[in-house]
Amino acid sequence: MIHLTEKKKVTIMIAIMIAMFFSAINQTIIGVAMPRIIAKLGGIDYYTWAITIYLLTTAVATILVGKLSDIYGRKPFILAGIGLFILGSFLSGLSTNIFQLITFRGITGFGAGVITSTAFTAIGDLYLPRERARWTGLMSGVFGISSVLGPLIGGYIVDHLDWHWVFWVFLPLGVFAFIMIAVLFPKVPRREGETIDYFGSLFLTVTIVSLLLTFSLAGEGPGKYAWTSWEIASLIGLTIVGLGAFIFTESKVKSPVLPLSLFKNDIVTMSNIIGFLLGAGMMGVMIYAPFFIQGVKGISPSGSGFIMMPMSIVMVFATAFAGQLMTKIGKYKGLLIFGLLMTTIGIFLLYFITIDTPISLIILYLCIVGIGLGASMPVISLSVQNAVPLRQLGVASASSQLFRSLGSTIGIGVLGTVMSSRMATRMTEVFASDSQTGQLNIPTEQAKQFGELMNPEVLLDQPKLEQIQKAMPADMLPFAESVIRNVRDVFNDALTSTFLVGSIIMLVAVIVAVFLRSIPLVSEKDYQQQQPKETE
Image (cartoon, rainbow, N blue to C red; front, side, top):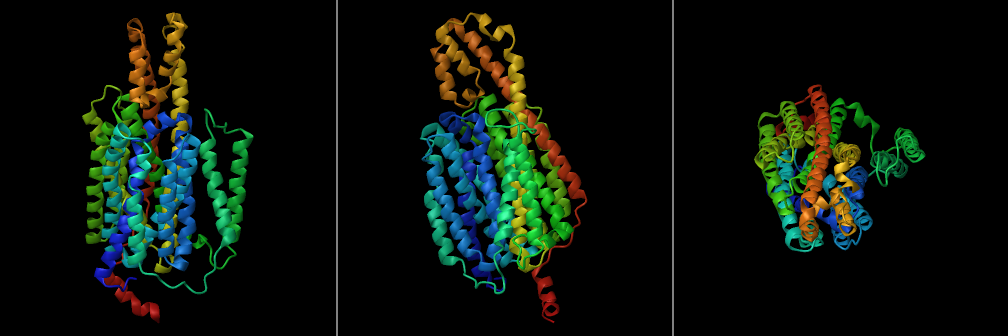
């Protein structure tokens, strides 16, 4: 596909970007809406599972499709991915409880993994690394644009319409993207001599799922198990057995689903480690910043979307600049270190925000994070693609997406545990005092209302919170306001703890990036010069 005319390449890229936008906007539109959705469906203790299952199935789909698309071409898989995403989104909107939502988000995640893996690999099919940098930046910019529009639209829907429309509003765009890919994307013949690695795929899936379940289920709270419990020990054991079986299988088969030789390339290995750490560290901001804005600051989902918007806009410009700069100079390491360092600083500053912090200062910190993410995210996948031959492009790109998804999922598990543990400790400390207990001689009819106020979940549903306060007798309102303030303080402390842990993870990513070996990006001119040597 590298030899297609530039006009044909651009047309194909437009179709790919529409498909990517459909996937991305349906992810970002849910971010600010999720707190309200969880408040409606109930189950704040299972909130992270709605995200974890999405990332888990995304991770599995990404790596499995990577090798298969190398054999059969990208087109059938990106079409299948769009179809699964449409189905999962439609069913998510029909959910009546948190467990149905978790299940249907799993289907959506599988579709998203297929779309993302094949879309980014398709850029490599069309362009060589130095020219690819510009398009990689633009593709990352699609995520940025969706990050701008998604929160605004999601916030408006849950404030003024029924929350179900968060999942349905962009389904027509999915149908349009399906048609565009079906018509414009060229079909390539199957690569001869390649076989499907069924056992490797099975063992890799077992390893990924058991590993992610370990970090998702371990911890404190409802649905969680202690690290020393037999449930977690069994999952760890299954992870080790699955990994051992996978390594043994991959060393024997002719066409491994994830070639072990890929990791002998130090650039691929180091880049994937950085991607893993970036995925884990950034989740504190992506997930818990909207929680802070809505739960602690008491701002509506629509307002939350506006507050998150500047970060997304800055990210778009930083991503575009990064792509153009890499295309111009042919280097990427300095840009990667700069981006990771800015992300680390921004997340660390968020650790110090409180209920009294001005919104303008929170926006400034988020913009620093946006600059860092915009500068670093396009570099990681590009550095991996630049370090491997074209025949390994699909599986190499898939490995990059896999490690970032693993990092995001494990990061959610770790940060979720940090938040839950800190919240449980602080709630016990705050409400164990006489001033917040039955010593207040609260009438029986108000006891239930005070019980609801002591649940942090109510902070995420402003209409319900206002309804409870209005139903309170005037003499009880000062006590109610005191309880709400204390719960906000607890929520504040728990959420900012995740920012501290996230910044530490990002600092480790910066240190690893310093040791990344960098090679110049291959250009069209370099490729033409190498052609005679490859055919000899």
